[in-house]
Every structure is written in structure tokens, then in C-alpha cells.
Length: 104
Image (cartoon, rainbow, N blue to C red):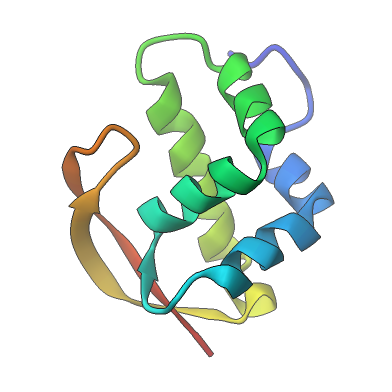
């Protein structure tokens, strides 16, 4: 359960320019994990506010999954296309499969 009625997707939409800046600075191809890592670095306060909403087991995974879903839903607007799955290090350095992205 979230502690705020504004969804993560809505906050990301409100901060779309910040999302686009991260996309633009990453060398393609990049993974959702890499995007989240760079997003959290460039937008630490916002990312921490997301984590604060999910203070429970798997909270980080829930937040990161929603960020990845935002990329997917908004891929056309962001100028991205999916290029398959890739195993790479997640937030905790554990290898897991996630989406790989290229610019259109």
C-alpha cells in the first residue's frame, strides 16, 4: 500500500523531462537496470520519495518494476524501442533479466 495517492507513473509523467534527460545521457543499448541506476543518481530525492512509499519486503523491486513499466508504456514518446532481454546487475548487483533499449 502506498502512503501517497499520486502514483509513481504519474510522478514520472510529471517529471518527464528528467526521465528524458536520463534516456538521452545513456549510451545505447542500455537496460532498464542501467536506466534506474542513472535515474536514481540524477534524481536522488525523487527516487528516495518513491522508495519511502514502499517500505516493505521487495519495496525496491516494486518501485523499479514500476519505473521499467513507465519506460515501456512511454517508449514511443521517449524515442525508445525494446531490443530483447538481457541479464545484468540489478539495484543490488544481482544478475536478473530485464529489458534492453535502443533509441529509435
